[in-house]
Image (cartoon, rainbow, N blue to C red; front, side, top):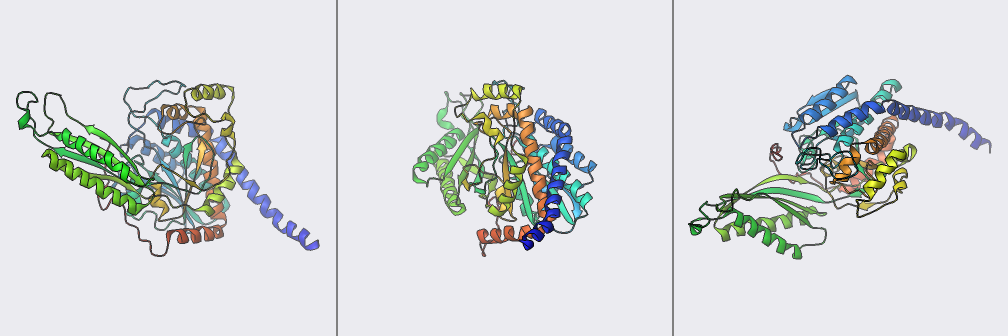
Length: 472
């Protein structure tokens, strides 16, 4: 009994210290709530597409410079990518931030469909919250590092063009994560979770068919339709779907089909994205799609060329790091709605096919392993350095990403509150890893075991330069 009492006396100051410094960090972020809301809302009001986020990246850089971070901009050959660093020595902990928007997703911050600007971009995946919340976490962790006297480096990664542009892949390929011990991240969502998870790897490309124009009525026999090439390819790929394994996902959009119906189109283009949980199977499906494109060109007497736009790995999970983030997410807690937010949420819910209890936004879900069906360029990061990410309830429960409902909630206080939940959770997790570097030992051990001894990284998009014009 005496030894147990002595043990309690010994650890009591440690427990008190951990609780007090985390409480101070949480209070600091709360005190700067309006500052971060204003930054996020500026990104929401001025959405920019992938590799065109000049205003967004400049705003985040400016705020980080004010806080004493050293900035390296234009990294990996991308004008809107940057790295902001504070501190020195090990451990080096990375924080990811995104800020690109989606085309055609403009929406007012109201619970009914109404575009702010017809056809304009919108933050339908909440990356304005993502970038700002991660920045807030990096700043709060920096302030703790400065006051604590601890050694370590906090590195914020400004990562553009997640939506199809594979921005992080080029940053990984450029070696920007080579000396990092662990990376924490998050993403907007409709619930509060910290799940070790995997998702689907991707390859994407634009296929351009070139034929010969002619008058579609007077001399159709003299034309060779590039649109026929696109449509023939699409038919063959759609037939291919029956002969692929279940995790396969194939999406396409005809980005150019001709200018007038009485002109045989001389040029047409289709944009493909292919996904699979297994990278080797993904490559196999991709080879078959290339054959469909070649066959379509042969059968329509057109020529075909293609440009790889993106390629991302599936995510490598890390349960050890996810547990640290789950513990901190539990300390922070979820999102509570006031009366006005509850009214907004109920109106949004009426427009949704899937309805979830609104009170779930205030709860932290149990940590479970999940298999995601989406994709992200965080996958390439996760195979090069241990990574874990949380989701915070920035959207009304039941809201799907890439929807007008997500844009609407992200432009008002529901989205802002979820962003602050993530900022606190990431900040506390960064502090844990710097304050007690031994926590990194099981994280790195799991990383090495899951990755395997023979792993060698090779980007799925090859050696191409960043596709800076893919949204132009």
